[in-house]
Length: 165
Image 1 (cartoon, rainbow, N blue to C red):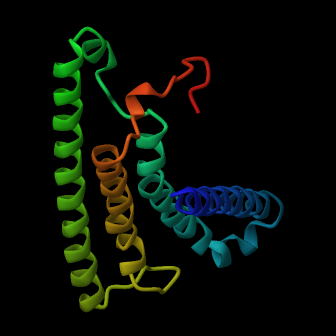
Image 2: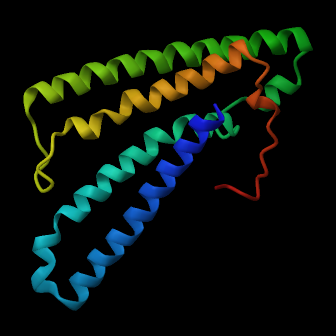
Image 3: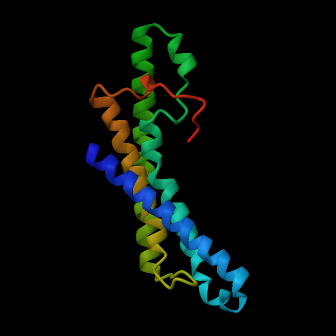
């Protein structure tokens, strides 16, 4: 899992850096050479793709880092046996829901790929936009599964409210 976490972090960091630099360049061109701006219309679409990819790929890292809603206040007031049962129920529900959304994501991606739909300015298959949905929810389902079958406990992660990022 350490390797998966590392790859997720590298991919998310690379997307964020690329989006920042490319969008900054795009704004600079619009201000300094507006006649070239129409040739760079693809940058906005690329950044929208990147934003979608960042959102879905960060789902699992957010869960693992204790950043998803966890009802900690309620759990800490429960007796240990009830707490274990509640955590198992939460994780099972999360696993089923994430796996279901991953399956829907696969279906949508296949449908879009077969339709031949392409993005207006990048001229690539729109399946590239949708493929990240099953990937992100698949990674999320994996994290829920690990919470069930290993001693991992995201509820034990201490979240510092000062650091929101």
